[in-house]
Amino acid sequence: MVDTVTRTSRTVIAGTLYRGHEGMWSWVLHRITGIAIYFFLLVHVLDTATLRISPEVYNGVLGAYKTPIMGIGEAGLVGAIVFHALNGLRIILVDATKWGTRYQRQMFYVVLGLWTLLMIGFLPRHLINVFTGGAE
Amino acid sequence: MRRLKLERLGWIFMRVSGFFLIALIFTHLIVNVMQDGGVHAIDFAFVAGKLANPLWQWFDVTLLWLALIHGTNGMRVVIEDYVYRINLKRFLLGGLAVSTAVLIVLGTLVIFTLDPCPTDAAANLLPSFCTAG
Ligand code: HEM
Ligand code: HEM
Image 1 (cartoon, rainbow over the protein chains, first blue to last red):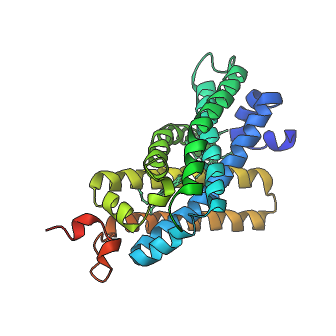
Image 2 (image 1 turned 120 degrees about the vertical axis):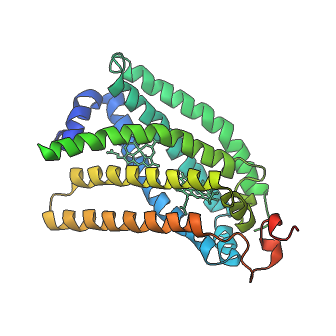
């Protein structure tokens, strides 16, 4: 871990700031969520491209998303995106402000708190839609 | 030196694009997932109706380019962190570059060339303005 953290010039900067404890967990989560979102986006541009084939094909492809299993997957995706976005903002603040480094640990707990609040707002609504919505 | 300067530019880009992506993605999710009915309400008529508006076209293109370039630069860093075998690394980085280029071109074309009212499709699948007047 230490080895990989110090290997590129980008992470040398990150390494001294974020390594260990909260800093390391936030880094691991940031990386995993970023990779997951990338692969989702790859598929997502392709499914959107079926718009160009015909309305029937697009609606058929989207029908495959409207299952409970995909609905749970979407919940996971939104959870990943919300974490990556909030923690990304934290990284930006740590790097761009004078006080950021001093409060990076506190800000990580703020990220977790905001994430929990946003998910509490999102999940019930989304899950109700997924399990009671349309017929597909 | 040149390599370092590029790396520094990438580092800045990740932060600037990330900042704008927050607004873009949260809006995207609120409009598509949190609307009445959520994902169940998404179909050709809904999307074609959106993309008939130039505002949504430019919104989607900005989202597409920023998210893909940000994500691709992030994946490049990840690959460079873990893959040392030079051939494998070249292969992965090349594949990454090609797939990103393809997705950017494809996505941009879809957004700007979509016909919201294809004549050979059933009217009930199309946005309501196709049949009005
Ligand atoms: C929601 C807004 C977003 C914000 C605020 C954000 C912020 C950031 C920041 C600041 C970094 C740099 C981390 C560092 O240099 O240590 C980063 C890395 C990354 N981001 Fe994002 N990002 C966002 C959206 C996305 C999206 C949509 C994707 C995928 C398409 C993505 C994929 C990645 C990846 C793969 C990395 C590299 C992770 C690593 O090196 O460990 N991000 N993000
Ligand atoms: C489950 C959550 C999501 C749903 C239901 C969804 C739905 C949609 C829909 C219906 C479209 C068609 C165009 C439009 O409505 O503007 C679209 C396009 C798009 N979405 Fe999403 N989206 C989701 C998550 C995301 C995320 C997390 C990202 C960013 C990483 C993203 C990036 C895009 C892009 C770039 C396009 C344009 C694609 C193209 O150029 O063809 N979406 N999405």
